[in-house]
Amino acid sequence: MALILGIESSCDETAAAVVEDGRRVVSNVVASQIAKHSPYGGVIPELAAREHLTAIGPVVDQALKDAGITPADLSAVAVTHAPGLVPALLIGMTYAKGFAIANNLPLIGINHFLGHIYGAFVGEDAPYRFDDPALYPMLAAVVSGGHTSLVVLTPDGKSHLVGTTLDDAAGEAFDKAAKLLDLGYPGGPIIERLAKNGKTDAHHFPRSLTGAAGKPVAPENRFNFSFSGLKTSLLYLVRDMGGADKLSEEQLYDCLASYQEAIVDVLCTKIFDAAKQYRVKSVVLCGGVACNGALRERFEQRVPKNLIALTAPKKYCTDNAAMIGGLASFYHRSGAYNGLDLDAQARLPLSTELPFSLR
Ligand code: KG4
Ligand code: ZN
Image (cartoon, rainbow, N blue to C red; front, side):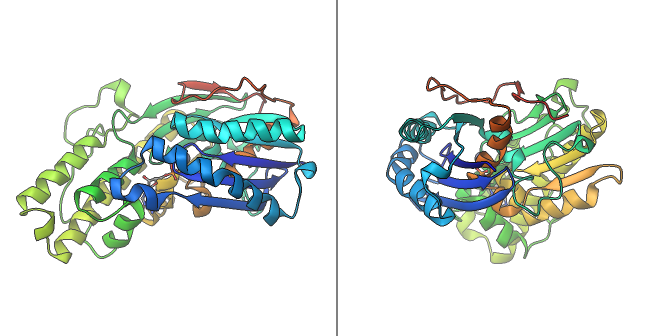
């Protein structure tokens, strides 16, 4: 039995979790900084780092307490080291390194992006194991505030980025729309709630890089995304309607429902086109935006019969450490540990290689 402590601090959530053998989440603590960043309508990196600094100790202590264990019961400590806001990552990493030294534990650096994919496999009721050969090749759609990326994972543990956003991430499209309409932060959950009252076909927002406008899509952009034009289109629509403060409730709900529909439509169209193109056996939907009910529903409706579709449970879609501690069990099994020279990295590389095979 391997008990791994996972630590996550790549953005605005300070999180720690204890996971047994990659599946059983023994404890899962998430301290959100939303209230601190809310007045700015987005995450301020230095503020995030300062908040992590004060939260990290108590959050880790709580995770151990909830699990009813001491550091001596752990097999390893895993920490997100990339990609993310570097000042924020450094706090979790420095804490994890100190924790590893003090308790004589191996250290495992985890890629946050792969962690999000693992969100679909953590928890005792996850329908598949990450290393189930029936799932590969797998297409993962990581849709969050930092990413909108399509990755193909092959059984040899290699992952290839096949599409990504050229500007805003889908989560940013939600957050920026909410900011524009003065609705609060983060925008995704607020827009989802209000959009339920509106008509999805009240306005036709652009579907960038889909060819829907009648123009062919350049081959290199077939699986890329662009959401900044959508946001601008909302800005002009609202301006033409007299400004955000002049909208009636019904007008606001219609704008939001149509806006959300444009995001959901583009995401599902590209995900299933890519699944076909790369002849994958499974598709995983994960990341914070995958909490969105309209997206989850459309995704499930559009899945072709021959494809296994996995949607991460909502609690493992937004940033958490269970996905980090869970994925780390595979590294632990193959002895893929990091030294204390483990570095932080802001960006996602085009391809990554897991230090183990999934076969
Ligand atoms: O995965 P996450 O917690 O952090 C990143 O790694 O970015 O994702 C946060 C993003 C935010 O942009 C937030 O607005 C979005 O996920 N989000 C949602 C929903 N819940 C969170 N977007 C749409 N609908 C939701 N229900
Ligand atoms: Zn994330």
